[in-house]
Length: 328
Ligand code: GDP
Image (cartoon, rainbow, N blue to C red):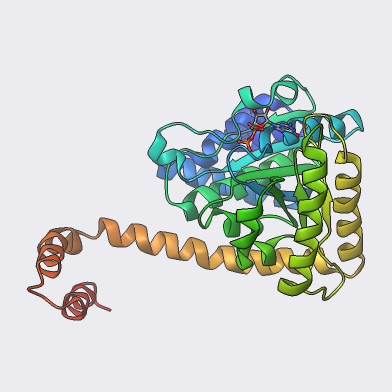
């Protein structure tokens, strides 16, 4: 009888039973670029889908040094002590360039790294932002199937990765530094629109007063940039990942948000909207991959690129020729 059970089925069962090694293997499978691995991963995720979706999904962003890993270590430990199972994932497309991931690095979260109720997975280390985020989304689903009920997805506060993480999660937490006068001046409207909460971090010792002042400024900025609408208005809190001050209140707000939106069916609605976005993002990724590997294009592109760069050919004419070659 045993030989009737396919390896993928056995892997799925072990993962559902909460075996960490099975979860790690499933994630490795889903991150693989080999076509047969991708197929196996897709089959596995399809099978596990009914067991997903029960976690609170939280995105966390902030510039390097704002204290993300310290805060995640403290918050995650607080949550596991209260009976939660916490997965920490990361979206860091820059790791392709630097060759090593800085986010989701276990050494940055000393307590969680040895916590049996926590699972830390660094960012997939290669591919486009779309590809990295898509793999992270699959990892999130696998973690949910394995029984993790809190998913924290970390990203740096630069570039497009914030939008990608906001599209993966139910709640988007933006960490800010005190003494961020300049930052306030240049506060990005985009990031404020994504934020479900702003937390001014390092509100401890000498930093406490500055953090409170910064929080007041952010509150004022929010009133102008993002007036409250709908069932949630973005709170601004002060916290310290170092001392743990304010973390209880921070998590209560996240739970309150979840309860309030869930009662109105808005979490499910948000996730469905995200799924549709993901569908198109994945189609675009595939199209781009197809483009990159198209033999006709591969043969002609260098010449056309050189001609456009040298000003010998208009970009429109080159684009037309490429489109014709691709039958578009
Ligand atoms: P990340 O790059 O955003 O992950 O930031 P880290 O968590 O690595 O923290 C960067 C630096 O800030 C480290 O030296 C930390 O010790 C320090 N730090 C982090 N959180 C706090 C905090 O809550 N208060 C204070 N005073 N320092 C902190």
